[in-house]
Image (cartoon, rainbow, N blue to C red; front, top):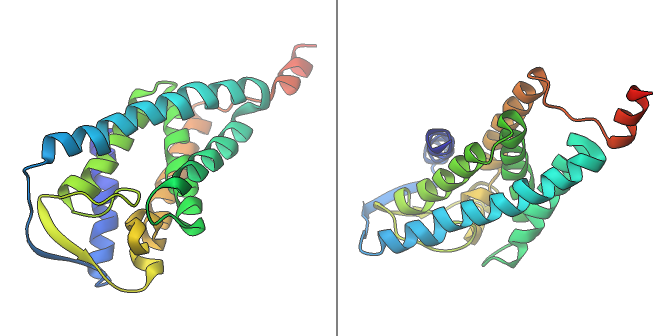
Length: 200
């Protein structure tokens, strides 16, 4: 999960750099790295995955099946980010698609929280502490000093690359690939009433 989260966000940054909207301007400031690591990567990954995938996804899936659980928890996850700095409707929709689908599918595939926690933590750590990009609207200091400039659709405006079309496309495609693996593995749960009919 840690490797996957780092690689996916690194690909997003690479595309942004190739399009000219991400540029490294100098060395970064590492003085606040330990605190930022806990505040922007470890704590959000643990707490949010326990709530959204460990509790809500499992509870909804038990009654409504995997599709309903994936759609609702993705929507709730995106809406939960509307309270963040510089959040917009586009940012919330982007989070719902790119992160909600990816993390929900990761849980479906493994039936464990470790993969979504690893993806989530490394995603946050890579964008903030390595690439100096706002983490869901919150500014942090990375290994480099960098700037985002260009059309809001590509930069995510003040929210960061998570609200960009680049991240939405790249991460959603990755999430759909994880979802396909989960379905092929037989991890798609039918709604309770469908399961009940099959038992009759």
